[in-house]
Image (cartoon, rainbow, N blue to C red; front, side, top):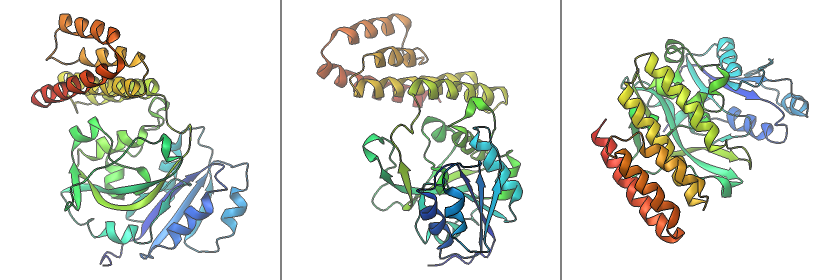
Amino acid sequence: MKSNNTSLVSVIMPSYNHGHFIGETIKSVLSQTYCNIELIIIDNFSTDNTKEVISLYNDERLKVFYYENKGIIASARNYGVKKSRGEVLAFIDSDDIWYPNKLDVQLKYLSDYSISCISSNFIPIGDVFYFKRHLFFGKEEKYKDYGYNEIALANPVMTSSLLTKKEYFIDVGGFDESRDFCFIEDWELWLRMSRIANVRVLSESLIQYRIVKGKSRDFRDVSLRKLKIFDKHQSLGYISQHRKNVLLGNCFVSIGKAYLDANDRKGIKYYICGLRYSSGFNNKFRTIIGLFLFHIPLSIRKYIIESLYKLYSIINRKNK
């Protein structure tokens, strides 16, 4: 089923030294069943064969701009939006792939004013062994709608799957170009978008997301960046101090659990740090749990961590 929407869709693609992938990405965009598009590539002066690969595509819908983003991909995406003419925006990384019906499917939902943007499920490709992020839907679920609190706990949106109206993107100020938010600037934008209306994620997989070994960020680095985002949002009045503590607690508990799943004992420190933010656990209890976890066998420790994690989640749901 095709969309009745006739809006021009501007597809923004930042690129840097992805000559071995970008051709397939370009082809997936230009081959969309929805044809009223412009593909805007913002290249950070690639030093490989990216320029030569792009030149192989003789399509008037393809536009290329050269822009030094100084390592801040948010800057490149914002620059692409400034160069765009469409009423609707989509984003894709230069190594990901769209299925042919991606835009047609998503555009059907764009007139729903209860949502600010539309994302979709995805298929991971590449070094999938190193990938731990997944979206789960019920058997009959066509989509899920996410508000600020849900997105703050876990990012359900892949940048390459997003579709939104340009007016919404501009209203919230676009991607934050602060270096402090590098690598999670997309998640911070979804949080602001969700304050306009919910973010809808379709259960259908409409993109292939490429996984490259070493692409993911260090847990500690990400947690520190999240802390700065929560500081920003508290200062803007988006969240209370209590809600900020709940979010920070969840962040550190999740990091600790991930380390422990990898049999790394440093996860205990993160886990206890996360419990520190929960009003359901007093200091004495946290100290006892910390000492206990350090001295029990790994096989038993995992079961206890799982139980504490579930208890922690229940307590913080009640304290929203």
